[in-house]
Image 1 (cartoon, rainbow, N blue to C red):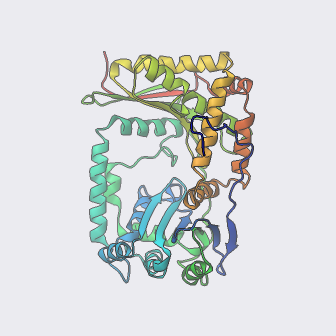
Image 2 (image 1 turned 180 degrees about the vertical axis):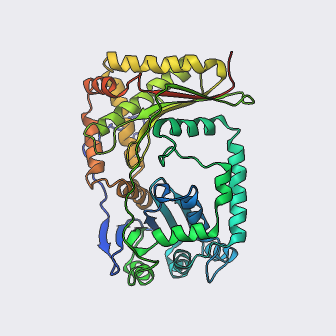
Image 3 (image 1 turned 135 degrees about the horizontal axis):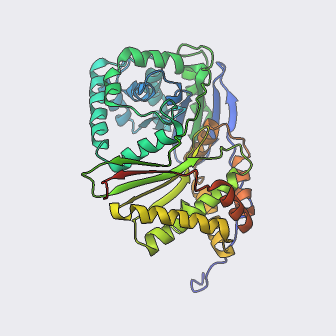
Length: 429
């Protein structure tokens, strides 16, 4: 019998063994990553295209091209697409990042033949119907108008602009007129340029049988699809960080203010990147962090404050964010700098560092506990061109980071003079 009065022995994880996908290429050259894990009769298929905001010629072009794929094809209306997917118990997700566009299908294995018919039509013959596009633009415009009244939206837009400049994809934000410029011809041109077999990677996860791969191959792997052309040239953009330190966006009707602080920081190729992630987690990356313990728990200035590093393919940013009442904005910012001073001057205790290590390792394990979460992890790695050793290297860096490393990294990369401050809310006298 199990004696529940005795606490189980706590064991530390000594190594992290990543589940490497099986990699193959279809006859038409499309790379395929297979994660055959699990016993549920479900499969997930992700199409990843180099077709994010980085590649567009017009604002909103990438977003609406991707979102309109389900709104009508040469053989199916939007209603028919929705009805078919619903009747087969499938789920479709369409999303766009700065650099990539994603088309994700979850399907029961027994209905995969039928759900792939729908997916094939969407990826090969979308029509971008004007009526459906007008509805989608109108809905998005309403969200845009609502966002103009939210301090967190206004602060984030200004923060991106301050860090990267108005000509950089990370700093660009759409305005009302940009929504009105969206049209089917613009979307069709973007689709033709980027949604084709030479610009695509496929991830298949779940219970993946040979029959499943065969069905996918017949539709997307034998002959080229789309309008294949040379792989899109990777554009380069200059980061133009504003020289001023403090920025304010007034929202007089708001009872709360949004605070964003940060700066451009190291990319994933830098040898200090992994240990910097440990520092940022200790600083503000989890509920027991320095910022939360001081500014929420001790001072009561906010319900939540966080710090993290954005997952941008180049020039990621350190972002510190919080919502507070206008009278607490200045004290909150003061305490952020106070915690930076502490990290730069004092060694963290081994107990605190152990807590952060255990949290980060536990988070890695939670994020890689199923075939679908592994698919997310490898899509993340693929879109950032990370090596297969990324996860094990990250794990090792977490284990190896010392208190002295934390202090030196804080001195090197938490530069108070470089941090930009953006506040949106009611102006205080």
